Image (cartoon, rainbow, N blue to C red; front, side, top):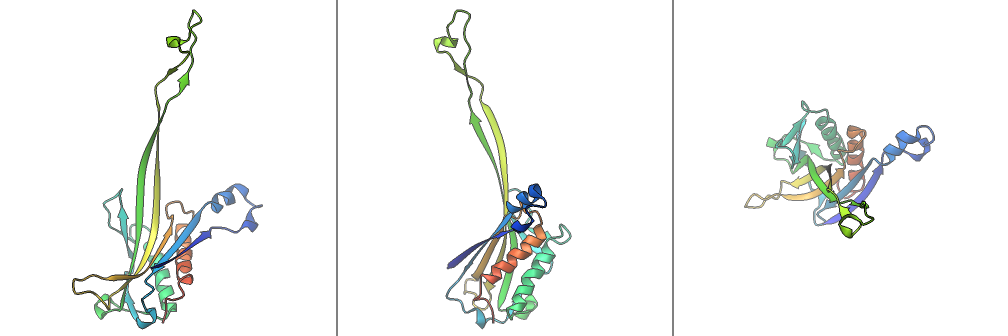
Length: 209
């Protein structure tokens, strides 16, 4: 498998002088686009694909949900439409899943939520009435400070699966994967996701008829 990595910045530096605080925040908001592919695959040998219209998968260690639909959030459909647009421009034809497509397109979000705690002790010094420090040592350790913080990260994933060569034990090979994010720190989630999908196909010139 080969892997490519690109970082997409949200805004251009030329707007820095207009809104420095707002643009400083935007410059920190970046989508990393990572792609991998099977270098033995001949992408030009496939013609058709199938994919969902308004549902994407959802994998999370915080929620039991397994899908996100257009009714839940205004996100799946524009993301799926952008994937479809890129595949069509590459020369592939979308068909229904019961029409024996060559490829299957999976689109899903991986959510990784973690909680951390750190414990620190402060060293204090208290002199006694007789000039001796507390416990004759001049200091003691007080109650610990406990800090709790969490991180919530997410990646948008697009996969191309080979339906033409399913193994006898029903295993399906992944020909191409794109990982894009972080979707949970994005300022303009839909637009940045679409831009990242475009970039994923740009850096994968081997895909196409």
